[in-house]
Length: 276
Image 1 (cartoon, helix red, strand yellow):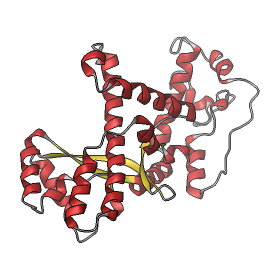
Image 2 (cartoon, helix red, strand yellow):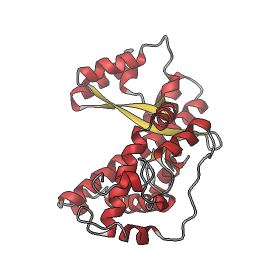
Image 3 (cartoon, rainbow, N blue to C red):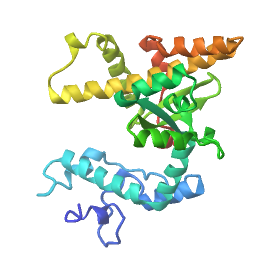
Image 4 (cartoon, rainbow, N blue to C red):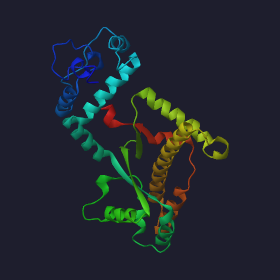
C-alpha cells in the first residue's frame, strides 16, 4: 500500500498529490476525534464518483484490479483505525461494558462438575457461569479466581462474549459482529438453514474443509444462542418457584430445553460498538 501511495491519497500522510481516495471516507485520525468528542466533528465528503470508478483509476502492478484496490485500501484503513489510540480506548471501554463470561466444562472436568453438583460443593458455581456480565463479578467475591483455577487444571474453558441487556424484553442478547444490516440478515438466514440440518449431522455434515468451517461457525453461534435462551428461561422459572427444590428443578429443566430457531434468533443482535 505504501508503494501505491495509499497513505498520501487518503490524506493520512502529507503530500502535494490530490487526495484522490477520499471517497473512502474520513481518516482514522478524524474518526478518533469524533470518538473522543462523542459527536461528529468530521463527516464523509460528498463525492461525485462511485467507489468502483475511483478504484479503477488506481489500478497498478501492485493492485491489478479495482477489487484489489478496494480490498487493499480497506485493509490499510482497518489497520490504521485499529491502531488509533482514541478508537482503541473507546472500543476497550465499550467491550468491558458489554463483556460477559461463560464457563464450558471440558471432558476432563465433566465428572468433577457432576460430583460438585451432587454434593452441593462451592466449586460447582465455577462450572455453571453463563453469560455473566463483568459488572456482576463483585470485588470481594473470588468466583472468577475459582474459574481461572479450574481452567488452569483443564476442567473448564472460559469464554468471553459481547452481550447486551435488553430491559424491555428482560433478556441478554448475544452480539454478532457484522459489517452491515444486510450482512446481519444473511447471518440470520444462514443460521435458520443450519438449524434445519444440525440435528441430522450424519446426513448434512459437509466434508469440504471450507463448508465444514462454516458449519462449525454456525454451530458455535447456535450454542451461544441456546445458552442465552436457556438462561432467560431458567431465571423466569426460578423466580416463579416457591422453594429451593423448585428453583433447582427449574434450573435443571431449563438446561435441557430444545428451542426452535425462531426463538433463538430473538437473542441475536448487531454489534453495538461497530454500529455506533
